Every structure is written in C-alpha cells, then in structure tokens.
Amino acid sequence: MTFEYKLSKDDYCKAIKIFTRRFTKNGKKIIYMSYFAALFLILTSLFMLSSIGIQYLKFKQNYSDSVVSKALEILFSEHYTYFIIILVYVVLGVFFLYIATTFPDLKTKKWANNPDNSQAFVSREVSFTDLGLTSKYVVEPINEKIWKWSDFQDVHETSDYLLFELSNKEVFILPKSLLDHKDLEKLIEMIKTQLSS
Image 1 (cartoon, rainbow, N blue to C red):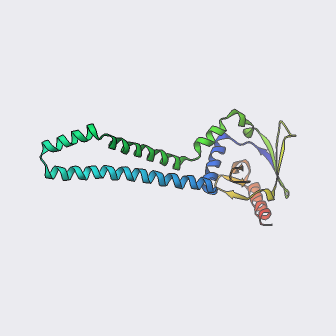
Image 2: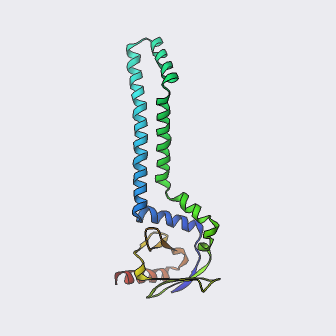
Image 3: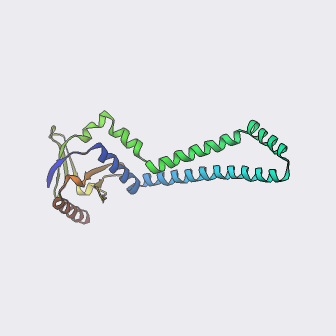
C-alpha cells in the first residue's frame, strides 16, 4: 500500500498533544503533577483568605468599629506581605492549571514553527508492506527511512490519527484523512496482523 503523505503543522500539533497526554508516562506524570500543584496552591490561597475573613468577623463582633478599622489599616500597611503571598499562590496555581490543560502545546508549536524542522512537513511517499513502513521524500528519493514492524512499540488509534510509537519521544503520525475508508480498513487489519505475530 503506497500513497502520498504530507503532514500539516496543525495535524502534527494535535497528534503530538494526544500522544503525549494519553500514551506517554512522562506526559501523564507532568499533567498529574501540574494538576496537583495547581489544586494545592489555589486551595491554600483560599484557606488563607478564608482565615482572614473569619478572623475579621470574630474581631468585628468583639471590638468597636474604630478598633476594627485601625486593625485593618495596620494589616494592609504593615502586613501586606501576607496578601502578596496569597497573590503569588493564586498566580502560580493558575499557571500550573494552564500547563496541565495545554501541555505540550508550547513545545510542539515551537518545534513545528522552527525552520530547521520544515522538512517534516514536506510531501513524501509512504508505503506499508509486510516488512514494515517506508518513507521517502519525493524531491529526495535517496533520503529514505525504513522501519520494520518490530521497531514499533505500539500503534495507537484515535478518531483522527494512527500513531506509530517508536519510543516515548518519537512517533510516526498518520492522519486518517490521507486514506480512503477502504484503504484505512486494510491498513488497520495489516497492523493488527503484524503486531500480533
């Protein structure tokens, strides 16, 4: 089975995000740790704020308004570092939450937009046989890559891609849109047969 292959930057970024978040240990570890850090920091800042609020209400019940106003004035003028700590915790919590929900978008987009990696998005010819996968650039047929089926640790199927895992850091991305339905079914059957043998 041979066909023309051209990977878009958009497909690359989407596929790498799916692969990293779902199928790599390191990706899952970073996501879980980021969620934990975000939860810890945000909950800690909320606890600190609620403690101030509770103390304020208790103080207001036991002392006159003038005393309470003076105490608040001292709190905001002399002990403002407490509020700075809360603010820092909130900012860091939001940052880790952003990392957890978007990882690895920044890294993949930077890689895709790097001119040194432009060859990854050049048209090439890809072939699947009983021996494995062959990829060669149309403009440079001599620059050929060959992977045996035994080189793949696994092949992950998603709604839009087939992800051929070579390692935790390397993956061959095949957008399903490059194949018609009949060829796609044949390829999936071939993959199942080769990986189970």
